[in-house]
Length: 143
Image (cartoon, rainbow, N blue to C red; front, side, top):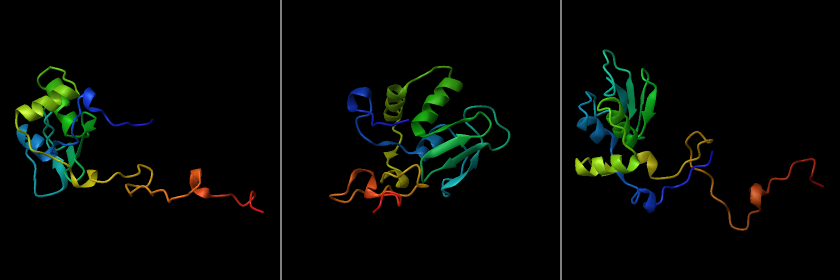
């Protein structure tokens, strides 16, 4: 599956999005914001034990009970859908974040693009004059 950038006419505009910790504070999630990762009670459903894991440095969350996860916009969308019974889309979630003054910014790991097959390492850049496919020639084709 190929991913593409959302253009400004589709609702993205700028690359900034609300920080996950500001969205979690807004929805009264009890968590330790001094740590980059941890567990908390899920704001999407009644929870007695912490099942909501978060990684603030990556801006991602996952609930192991209700099988939901994503970034800060996804948390806003899911909260409205599951707690307020009002489904909203990306544009409305972005407007909600701006309306409520949620702190925006890029998280540390989002500043550079990474390869999803390289275990989170940066994708190798192309060298000038390099052949398509990296220039590798298998042994059976070499002379």
